Image (cartoon, rainbow, N blue to C red):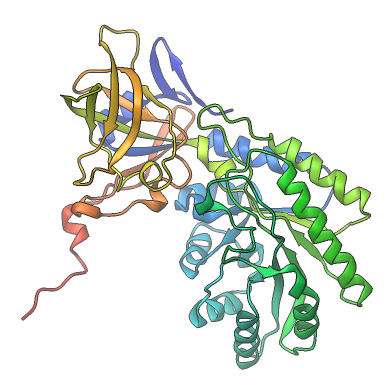
Length: 417
């Protein structure tokens, strides 16, 4: 459930009209709902009851400081994949001790930064990374908290670009290498084994892949225990999907209960870490855009809007589907068969294809489910300034990132003498 809805044929975010935001802030712009972010975080946290858990929001989904601040105030931890994301968490008031650092390519500088800050855990994704972390921790005189990320070779049934748990993916270490790597890590004086991790992909709409992966990881937990290696936490990753069109992903409570059922049946009492990102932020945001021109095409009209692939990359990159709706409906605008496209000089620059929409030049449109992997994947292609970001909080709204300007884009550049 989200807090975007129509009132007398005008679309609102909580108690604020989106037309009002467009008039005052301009378009394109991203609009987030604080109430929706809070609702979605609690949907993951509360079903655990008294079971020990750590819900770590995946910063890569949406790293706006205000978004992170809202979740930090609820008690969230954070899953990061770069030193820059660690900086953002700390700037938003988060604690390094609530951070899990994932990712296959951590640099020397990022590992030093993480250990100096005191992150909760580093997810180790290769033997070479283990060696690097050990060497850096030894130089710093620290003991690095680590958990190996296991690749369980489970097909998540999602887009190949966001599948991470198959043998051919770059992520994690093979399950067949796990015991040897844990035994090697235990022998390192500067390594502290804290847990085991697994993440098989994003936008999963079925429970079976999650359950299969958990069973395989628990088999490894048993093997490690039999060999005297005792763990403290089990990181189940994220990946629960959202509804963009007609998908029917498991509700967070359904997912949580399925995981707890397996853990209890297997007699596992390890603290659980979850890393939801899209499922918290995705439907908590929309991209607001205005129709610049309507141009006849061979099979319908082109609605040329002021948002483009540099603002929302998912349709061009993944052929992703986003619902697009009129901000004001019920008027006399004709219904059109149309493609909604942007002004970027690429044929792949589209927001949506094959839609039926009532719109005329100057109308406002809302691209739904854009709160995750929207602004964070944006760019300045075609020298286009990135859009503003707005957070709605009840009857108030706040610009939480100013719109870029052409001057700001070139501020770091220098002409030759």
